[in-house]
Image 1 (cartoon, rainbow, N blue to C red):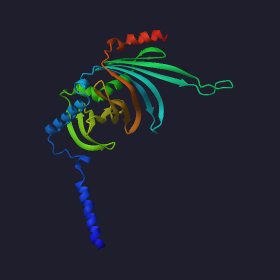
Image 2 (cartoon, rainbow, N blue to C red):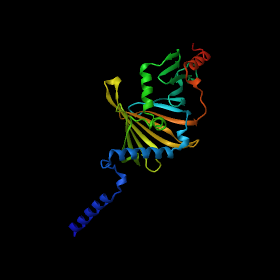
Image 3 (cartoon, rainbow, N blue to C red):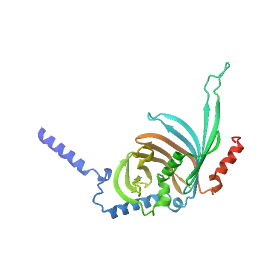
Image 4 (cartoon, rainbow, N blue to C red):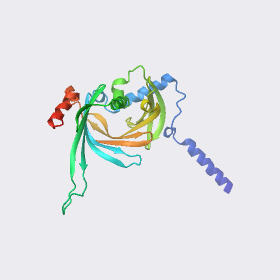
Length: 291
């Protein structure tokens, strides 16, 4: 009787395992022909675009957002937090303001020590392949490595990809199947460009919003070592008809390095091209006595 009971229990376990929904596990996409795989990947992108607002999403021309940016150590500790104001004019103009406060501690003289601090701001303007920085010393040209990072970040911007680059004939698309990310079932795609820069995007199955992107590429600054960056998108909210992720976490080679929480986002406010010039920073510099 005991042997029979064990046999029935084992049979039940096998049945449960084989009957578990296959959609909860990664799917083998080897059976898909390359053309069908590419078509499936493009279909998922279009479905996501519609879920994020369709025409309203595609017609975004500029973005104005404010929030908090935090840098994170390998240990997971937050190194510091800055207030940011980010102005973007698609496809290649951006103006960033970082606001911070430096604290001097509690060792001020007198019977009632008061924490003393100093507020400050720095600005960056990026315009195509050029850029400038305004700091305590005035306006200076952005360093070559900084410009290289900006070009790289544009390649990693999945929304810029969706809005401006989907018809690039050099892009190769592939459906990678389903998996579970952060306890959510997702549909995955992979996009490879002519330089073998790989972008993998996971779309939440129920909402079709992108919740993770993975970027794999060779870093010329470090002997062409392979690099993997990951972005996680969360806290989606509808803003002017566009579903917008207000929280983005960034990982570099397996370590979380930063996070940003946006507090306000506005679309299509008519940002002027004059905001994205060296002259605009020089005017700020003169106003604040930095030149």
